Length: 135
Image (cartoon, rainbow, N blue to C red):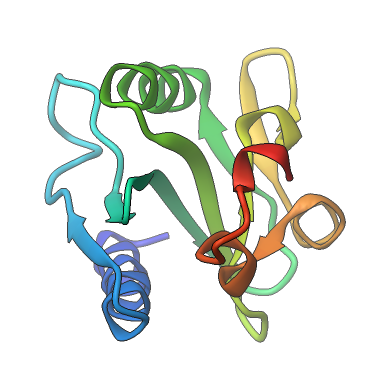
């Protein structure tokens, strides 16, 4: 995924949060700074989400380095946020997965359309009043 496309999908998701009356910020440079930092940080009424965003054309599997996932987990724990990986494949709505629901190879994590459809939750489920820590 190009840097421009990554920024575009991050801004798309940021707008979705604001349109639903959530506070949200995009952490510019999140993938290029030496400190752990998610792509987006969103919150409403004490519910805080740290989100790593991924998108893909077609059915392509998206790989996520173990370091990115470790940093998302570390940041989330320290900040008191729920860690989520948001993924959007062309022609599909955003889906959100917990770290434990990602696929894992020897050296990295991954998500593809099938895994996202099976294990992911929708944006409306993510922002619902229901406690997503139990989903």
